[in-house]
Image (tube, rainbow, N blue to C red):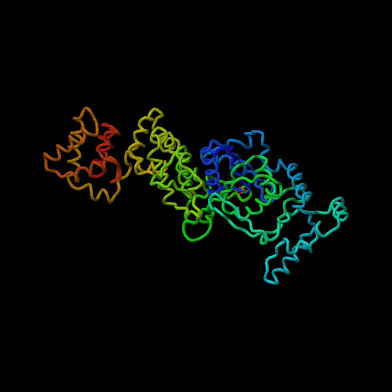
Amino acid sequence: MSKNIRVRFAPSPTGPLHIGGVRTALYNYLFAKKHGGTFILRIEDTDQKRYVANAEKYIIKALNWSGIPYDEGIGKEAGYGPYRQSERKMIYQKYAQQLVDTGWGYYAFDTAAALDIQRKNSEANKETFIYNWHNREEMNNSLTLSKEEVDRRIATGDPYVIRFKTPKDELLVLQDLIRGEVKINTNILDDKVLYKSDGMPTYHLANIVDDHLMEISHVIRGEEWLPSMALHILLYRAFDWKAPEFAHLPLLMKPVGKGKLSKRDGDKLGFPVFPLEYTDEKTGDVSRGYREDGYFPEAFINMLAFLGWNPGTEQELFKLEELVDAFSLERVSKSGAKFDLDKTKWYQHQYMQMADDEKLAKDFQTLFKDELKEVGLHQQAHSYVIQVVSSIKERATFVADLWDLGHYFFKAPDTFDPKATKKAWKEGTDILMQNVIEILEGINDFTSKNIEENIKAWIQKNELGFGKVLMSFRLSLVGSMQGIHVFDIAAMIGKEETITRLRTAINQLS
Ligand code: GLU
């Protein structure tokens, strides 16, 4: 790709960013990075009714947390700003006017009430009302009113809109990089409102003008915008501008059944549909986020990348840089991608295994600081925590799992699981455990291997049965049948602590 690649993510700040939006941003990011291009964030806030004040901040935070920050946009000006459409109002008026002047647009004065009557009439005839070539000559607009009348109305402040004059009876053959050819007859298109007399452009006008002025080379966006593509291409033609290339991404679908993945699906099935936790300013409702649920951004991004794209190989784990290398729009699928919670957790589990133990230990110490304080673990014990997390993470998906999996490394059991006790503590077990204590006392180099060799030799010599002894040993150290290799536990908690726990078990269970 030779020309300058500039792509944009253009969300409307109407609430928290859905993970489908993050995926759109991700594909834009990957495409930009792959081709040495620029990834731009533009905020499309022309719809004041749906504007939510904290949404823009949320979007930026979400991109940053996901590891896909924008190169250009709010706070990162590069000569194409401003990047909020509400701050570009002045720009759109000129272009709306240009369309009227060239005959591609016209003023329409039809009141909401008049349009409503038309709509009701159509409904009564079981038709959908559509404002276009077939009725525009009967409506209240600059195509039917005299020039003097139009000028008079505008001068006296009559509310108006500027509509696009969609050409009649033309077969448009649109090219989409994912879908290939898309054919549309212009007769089914309506004369969309592009501009309102309150000085606000609609999405369509602002979007095209900005993509042009910001020199966007590729528009990569969700499938829900595919129906707008015909109008957008017509607008480029009307302005005599070269259109960018288009790629419409498949929808993110519900895990079960049909339809688009919604917040309700997440609530019902227990997973977030937002990257970060979000508090609704009005209702105070809190929606959960991947970050707060304990997902690593790398796992989240890897999972999202595969919802609609695949590399064409067996490889499933991709770091961001690898995604950049492997990504191509050709391998984005046309059909919707079903969200899969198990797969999402699988990614997280994989990234947990690959995570740096030192970082995991830090996260663990932060998350469980109260628990660790209670057991009196000092900051100096960081290296111990690293060892612990490294030995138990195999079973963990989230950092939050690590306490349940490894609490016995930090504190002696305060109770003994009754079922395990029944199985592992019989008559005479106290004597066996007393013997174990004596063996342990004799070991100077208290490594897992040494402990294992000594205890096993003694078991063999006395024909005691491994299971019997080792179960009681484990019960004494852990309080249940849980945990990693029992000799590793002993070695890690140390000789003194191992012997103390054995003594406690003997006292409490016999
Ligand atoms: N503002 C639109 C949205 O919220 C942008 C669509 C586009 O990328 O053209 O998704």
